[in-house]
Structure formats: C-alpha cells, structure tokens
Length: 79
Image (tube, rainbow, N blue to C red; front, side, top):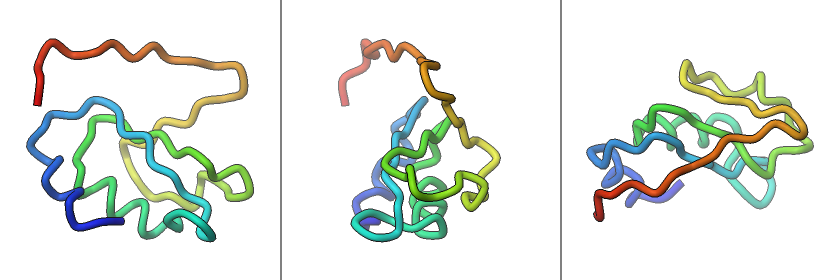
C-alpha cells in the first residue's frame, strides 16, 4: 500500500484490481486497508492464487471464478 492511494478516494472508481499475496504484494489486511482508502465500488483481488479470498474482509469484494469475466469500459471522464 502506498500513501498516494488516498488520493484516489474522490475519483469515483468502479473497479479496483489490487494485488495481494503477502509475499511480493500486499497481504490481506493491507489490501483491505488500501481498498478502503481507494473507496472503489468493487474490489477484485489479483495475484493471490496461493491465498484464500475469504481472508479479505470487505463488503465490496468481487471474486471472479475461473473463465468468468467482466468487461471494463473506459470512462469519458479524464482525471
């Protein structure tokens, strides 16, 4: 997690893809704190194959199953 993440809170982010594995990326607790700072509508954990998503305590957590996909569309708003 980096301090600049708090600057994203007012950007009205729909999806935040946050890396977590606790080794090379944030652990579940740190990722949860980062997600709350960013305040995205949905949080999708990435790079946490060796971890259980149940370790992440967020109401807006979105877990994608294998072969499941979502389409992200670029916003017309430029930050």
